[in-house]
Every structure is written in structure tokens, then in C-alpha cells.
Amino acid sequence: MLNVNYGRNKELLVKCKKLREYSYFVDTVRKFSKKYNFSTAVDKAVDKCIKEEVLDDILKKYRAEVKSMLLTEFDEEREWKLIAEGFEEIGFEKGMEEGKKGIIKNMLSNGFTKETIIKSTGITEEDFDKIIVS
Image (cartoon, rainbow, N blue to C red):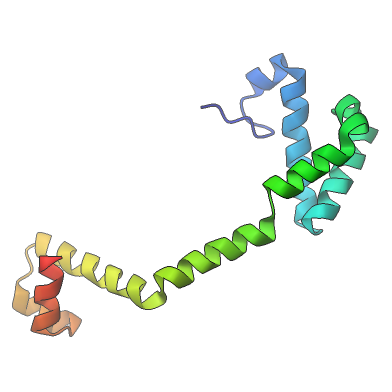
């Protein structure tokens, strides 16, 4: 797998003009999306690239299709919502529980006794036993 983000794999991008231009276009969209909503960012990136003669043959002819594809393929707000929903689904409590299990198992592997772990973490003996079984 090769990283074709703008500024990476320069040797490859020098050899392939269209790939270099595409990489620049994507980078331009990303930069504009930090200031504007994604739809506006795409419009501004298309305008800038046409002006700079970057992918201009494609962008002039297929502007609407490029924009539609980008908006369909990447909806940043939707992506962040999905990520947030995933965290909600997992839940904070479950995350804390998993962290606690990891700490206790790490303490055991480093030679701490059951009694020391219970005393230093404040968990019950019953919770300790559940963690060890899981």
C-alpha cells in the first residue's frame, strides 16, 4: 500500500501527473473543509484547482459528478456522528470496566498478590474473581 497523500511518496507523484493532481485536489478539499462545511469546501477546491489548471480537464467537464461523488462518499458530519454513536454504544461504563480489567491483569502479571490488588484498587473480592475468570 502506498501513501499518495499530497507531499508523500514524491517520487511516485512526480512520475504520475494525474495522481499528483488528484492528491493535491484531495489535500485542497481537506484544507478548505477546516474552514467551511464540506459542500462549500468541495466547491472552493474545485474552483481553485481549475484556476491552477490542476485536474481542470476533468473538473470542468465533470464538476457536478465529482462533487456528488465526494458528498456521497464522504460526509464528515455523518462520520463523526457514527463514531460518537459507536462510543455511546460501547458506553463509558463498559470502557471503564475494560480499563479496570486491564490494570488488574497487568498487576497480576507483574507479581502483585490478590490481596494487594484488592487493597490498592478498592475492588471487591467478588469483582476480582470475575475479572480473573474473564
